[in-house]
Length: 350
Image 1 (spheres, rainbow, N blue to C red):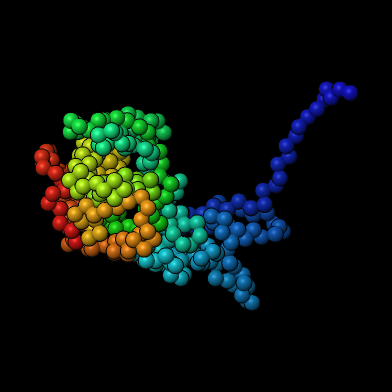
Image 2 (cartoon, rainbow, N blue to C red):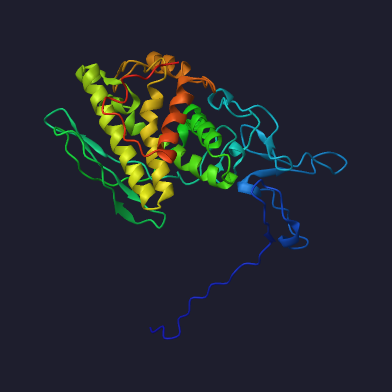
């Protein structure tokens, strides 16, 4: 049996509905279309079911069902309070995607997250050596997706310098914990009055990506406790040893930020700046101050107690905000070398 005239034909189905939206979910009727006489599609913006025509007179609330809450695209707000509002203390409990639906998504009405993960920070960029010191790495992924080799400044003689690749974080800011991000925002907008809002937002976004990389899940173990101005409980690390590692880490990232800045790579520069400032910001927290102990197997009660003490921003006059302003101003407006003493020596906590 021969099949010498075999054909595979794909027959496209008719387009029943084509709907275009603005970023907040309002339908753009002028460029949308629908076939006449067909069953109405209820699942529209972001695949969420639109509640419409449910009242007896044919009208409706015109709200999207996000699972945990209903969303009103006409005002760009949820209609009820966020069940996780305590995790986003700097934002209205009715906000949608931190007022930036181009950058963030909210899958279920519970917590906003960066679309696609954002940023370029992840990976085993710091590893142990027999000297109980650290090997410092930093490659980066540029806007075109190409891996580029980063260069660190000189570290102390007993710390080796190396490289590894950084991929993308798997979450955004721990689902709404925004104390670090809030301090970055306040510093950038305070220091850059004459810049456009878009320029300031770009700087904040890059710094926030950096702080989210520093605070990612893989950096929460005792081994990386120095990245949060703490000491490793797992090996009974001393305060001095942890401070030295934290100091080298911050200096390396600040010098990397300077390098990117000189090359005109502003996203990478402010990403590295945000990552560098993160441990310094942590040092102002009462539950980090003095390089307190942190291990890989903290109890749930310790984790909860730690989180509860860091949920609220200490405010514009806090040590957290002053320190963030100080290092941003140094980065943008000063050529003064960093002090030779440990950067964590004189930090006061809130």
